[in-house]
Length: 386
Image (cartoon, rainbow, N blue to C red; front, side):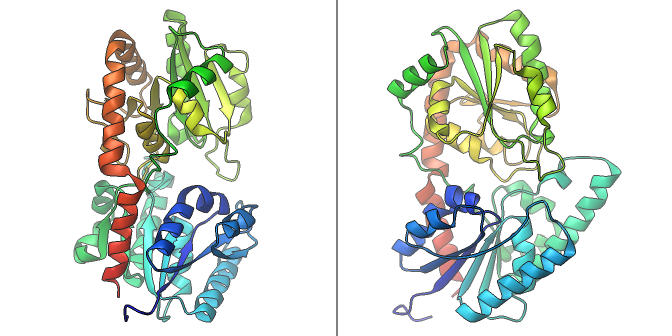
């Protein structure tokens, strides 16, 4: 394509909220470097906010709880009509369902198709027969997407290995570490730390561990709370905040009956969904994330790295890439209450190392996960498609 013609790019997400929080800054960056960028998202209350940024937004109605074939066919038609009418040069889709719909909707149409795999999900996290069948189905769908698209972007090297068919055309698969993190929005703030800790009644000698995530069982929440119930008996100065919402459209969500078991616990607090995550992270001493969900690279960990927190997380794909053992945190065995407890005790015992670990986390965010580093890599991958 000649340099004087601006390429039209469509970014697709499965929720307006996710686009606004995770893709908007990428879209604005791409606009700044010369692309004409539009968004395609469900109408879930974020369309106006996205439009205020200056982007053109295509939207549609969708029930997240409806996974049926008829809604999927309807969405394929919506996607296809928009792609045909607007004559985009490149479609960049994020997450499993939009990637699947985009692959069908773009068949025999001219735009270049980039599919972004942000983690392989629950099917790769469980070992039962049900999930083995789901994993086989998922692999088949990924293979179809691989055949249709021009490029697949993954967020960690283990996902390339798990998608076995990528070996047939390795040039079609590229690694970009995470979705990028805004180091100006997420940064260490001493004054904010003091204010937020005071607001929550945290004493100077109390250690606050924080976990930010969707509340699914595979995020390790049951194991985490069980470990801290035991720890609080030994050391009442250890506190845990679990920040996030129970996604009731997901069959693996944690029910409120479980969350309510802790409403009178002075050491374990479920805060619910919060807007100013950076403030709560600033108040914490350690980020803990015992997930065995098949992650891309968890956004919560990236935000914690940028704030300058030591990290405790599992030695699993997507999580293990964020920790250098003993340097900025500790890797633990997944699904293990004991491993969580042992790691917390180690942090408490060597609490004088926390400041240096936090500095190392911030350096990792600056060198590997800064948003402009990620966006530049994506821009270069776009250029290779034309």
